[in-house]
Image (cartoon, rainbow, N blue to C red; front, side, top):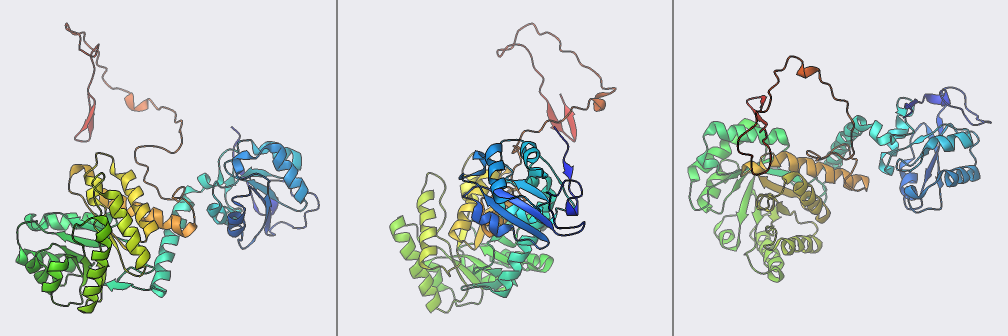
Length: 468
């Protein structure tokens, strides 16, 4: 494999095509070859200050159909005189060296996706382009930083133009053009020691939670404890805190202590709860899908008439195989009928009640919620299987937000949820030096062969050591 080629301004490491009009230090002139389907996006993202980029569209739908001969023909038809280099799509299936040899201009792999073009073009004087590795992979760290900047930009723009239906929870924007917020429930909080409540809250915030949800105990009433927990978390962390219960005494005490959001009120409890400036989440009765949307929207209207200004609707997301698809439909239908109404999507039960690893499920659920336009995601870490779900949900939310802003699929964003698998095979040499001086244990034969044939070692990690 040939090494990547450093590219400096003015084509110093390559050859400017004969007739080039720029001297060293002039802006780069670049030809971008692409297929028909991506051409509009390539044109959109090729506008970068200091780089003159010309888009050449080959008569193929996608880049993978390009051949060296076709690439050369289209580039020569356009004319290469005066250009510093050619960037091919990152997913072409041939060596760019053949194109370079025939047209006489340095030719490299560009990024796989058009949305990464600005980053590549901005870095032309600094990065080392390659004929084997797509430019986006060379710029992963830059992609991560760019993702962080884009997420901050989304927040900034939302703050300047919140949009219809938006409101604030202790300074945190909800609904409208604000990103969906991540809520983390502290399950059975009244039963936990204070130190444990604080430890969990701190961990959830470090993992990316934006709202702490005090989960009460179903069937038992702890109104004083509810107030204490709200006061404790507000004082300790200074973030929005919600109370998660149907118990009106617990709700009232929590509101008195400064709860920012109430989860949840239904038709029965709404009629018994006094008007408050605290935001409330409304849930419908568990009726069939055809009636659930109407029941929920009628409840929202009733709350408005009673003077509640900060209202969030929660159609209740059901577990898989128990009405999940129907409840997703209700979410989408409510959003379509009332686009300004903030929606809550509780994903915790869906993940908890499925024996599958949570990262992928979180990504899919967050993607669905982003397409629907929900305003709040709620999850919990109620078991060992779901430990880490808060961080996974936050990462999933950020990925889907980036994909939406880029107008792309949630791939090659600078962020991912690939914990157990790699996107591509990596060959890494094995270093035996750590084994130096290790004691070698030889397997001893056993009199009775094991049922599976032969004997075996059980290897585990315990106390920071690998034991066999």
